[in-house]
Image: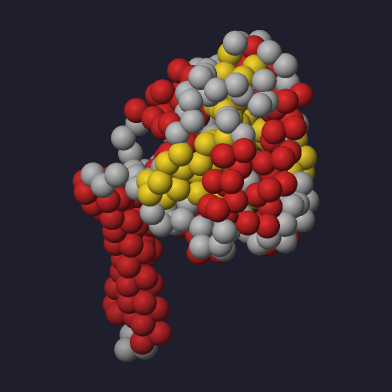
Length: 319
Ligand code: UDP
Ligand code: MG
């Protein structure tokens, strides 16, 4: 029997976790002829998410819980789940039921048709602020414009991946992980399933603005060196303007008699040049910081406690 692993990153999801486990168990029980393994990664929650997860692991043979020593972040949690997964395919899904577990059945059908990656594209999103909708929509478009790899629009991490894709993903050593982009980079046969993204079942988003920004910048800088080229373009543009100013000043000096004026233009060009230089150094700095982080070779995450349950030996409840 083919086995499908489902990886669920959880950070302070106490309010939703029981419902999520129940929903996933019931959905997977409804899919016949497959064996399911649920891997919950507790990303350093400070509420009782971990306690609840461990109780579920005790109750269901095919529910595994991994706990980090602190909060490492969503992408790290997903990576840890992938690292320990044993399925012939792995599904990534959020803990807050925004990605409907029912779609997993459709993903498996597509997988059986021969697709190696089946990703969920959000046809619509409920219960999000206009700010989140606008920033998310623009982010995916800017990212696509800048990135050398084509990354599908309006697509999160909700997806099914074949074992061979997962193995390649695990083998990629980079530390700043933008998983949806890395999967696009890996290639193979990929296809989309469109779904309606619901509102969060309960609790607050665990992606406040600062985290979202960091995630977005990570995505762009990990998949594009165009911002560096942009600073060269800005340099050329500024030099062009400076050239014109030079000609203009010479003309004023030689041909007219009011050449001592010009304080404003000097001030404006100094400020403008200063700004452009700082931006360029900043962009450069972001890339250097990434090189620095990669060169430290630190592990992606640290696991505090692990409940290992062998799905093969025990009689799986969801079979
Ligand atoms: N998450 C995580 N670590 C974090 C932040 C989020 O594991 O540091 C998990 C969270 O529990 C959820 C998923 O990542 O399962 C997506 O987070 P959330 O729903 O808060 O993001 P949003 O849907 O608002 O973008
Ligand atoms: Mg969510």
